[in-house]
Image (cartoon, rainbow, N blue to C red):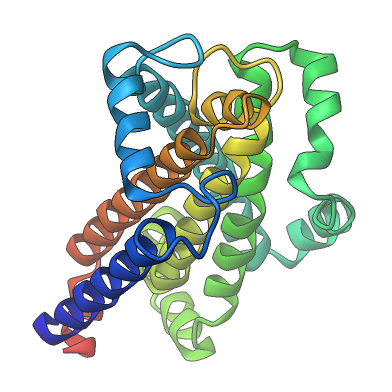
Length: 257
């Protein structure tokens, strides 16, 4: 792990050096097309002190975090149980899967017009779009996790007369948990990807708002600040989810070690 982190650090350092050389001393890239490190630093200083796009950086970050948290939580709260139900019950799969198969190929961004029509330009519409983007991966992976349970495990539980509630809590969910967490990671990534597009329309605060206003102002440095914030927050929340997975499934970590 230490060696891997060291290699990653060296890679990022090398990219930063190339970025500096290409944009400042050598002038290989025009500042109007790609900002230099100094441009990004001045943009970051501006948004932290004077503000940009109706707010300071921390206000935009908190607003985007709130939208992602709500959309992700609703998606997991609905997608995981639905996937478990479809995986466990053939009857439920026969009823639900045709509808799910129809809406599954629809891109999350295609729901933006309907979300605005139904819920207006407020945060509820943005949460709906994020929910749909995160909902699909959680359903698919939870469904797959149940279907990959070895048949003899289910047969043994049935022979022992395990109550349904105990079977679900102590056998079904733990056995499907690795793929459930995989679906949660994909859902979290989809939430951040969709957030920016959702905030491009009718947003007062948020990282998408920063990107939209900076694009209109032709402000590459601020665009880079917005993109960097999305990247850092996406990485941090993914690491947090990975830590939750490690603590929830210690046997997976032991197997990998």
